[in-house]
Amino acid sequence: TQLLEQSPQFLSIQEGENLTVYCNSSSVFSSLQWYRQEPGEGPVLLVTVVTGGEVKKLKRLTFQFGDARKDSSLHITAAQPGDTGLYLCAGEGRAGNNRKLIWGLGTSLAVNP
Amino acid sequence: EPEVTQTPSHQVTQMGQEVILRCVPISNHLYFYWYRQILGQKVEFLVSFYNNEISEKSEIFDDQFSVERPDGSNFTLKIRSTKLEDSAMYFCASSESRGSGNIQYFGAGTRLSVL
Image 1 (spheres, each protein chain N blue to C red):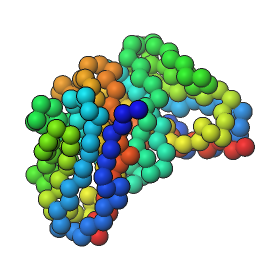
Image 2: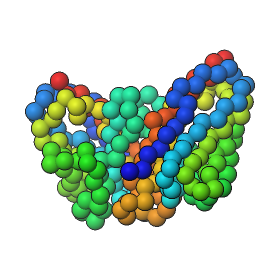
Image 3: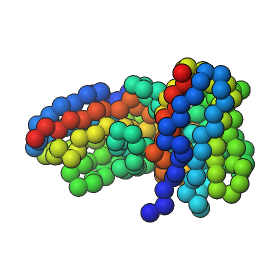
Image 4: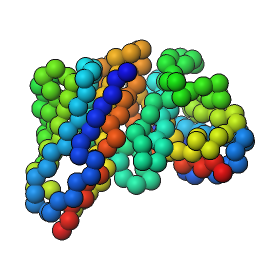
């Protein structure tokens, strides 16, 4: 069974600080996706990383896929209150042909002004 | 921008009743998914659907669950006899392809409350 462990589960920081969220597994994933979910809404895709070692940047967000495609990180530089929300990682499973997503528990981020 | 639409946004039902959750995937997408998220727990895969049949289903997706694409636009999840533990957010997703890195687009979800 493929599992994704995401940490930390909760994070409260001050505006301007940097933070990193981690997503780890003992399994290899075809790709790893990061989502943001607002209360009462569905997950919204931020980025997909596919190649081992890949780094993608989205403004102040930097996403990295581990060389072995078993882990990923999300780094936010100079966090803003607008970054507050739930961040979820999801790995594309290798079983079957329809690429089901296997999810981490999420990191609830609060950025205080 | 195209989006996945789910109705209703909130469904309240009595234990033992049947419920149908509805989804309208993005029009040119061919792969459809249902996930659920029990409060405080991980999002869990339920089922994937392609070419009018189930491609893969999880252990959660037992005989009480079924999916259907009754016409060219809707994709439904039916729970025949709801249990208290079926209370959760149910998310529908669709994707254009199944290749590696395929993007699944999610609806806003249906909150199912079983009393």
